[in-house]
Image (cartoon, rainbow, N blue to C red; front, side, top):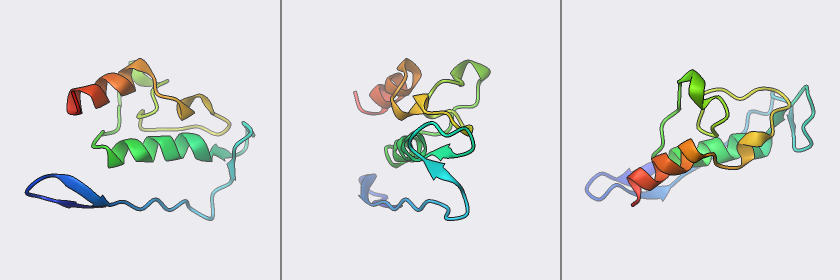
Length: 88
């Protein structure tokens, strides 16, 4: 990522998916969901950090994702409240 320190404007962001991982979009139990991972990484572009509390397991910004998991494609209340606190 590249941003201007003086204004915190993001001017460049790249996302690269590991070619050695198995990716899917159909909930395949032996693959990572590319849409969920992309949504999580995009949250970092917006300034969000990983969530670590056990109560945040369903949140898109939770620090781990699991094979076959697709529900993190959409934002949960915890995700939107964090984003709203950064961009009121």
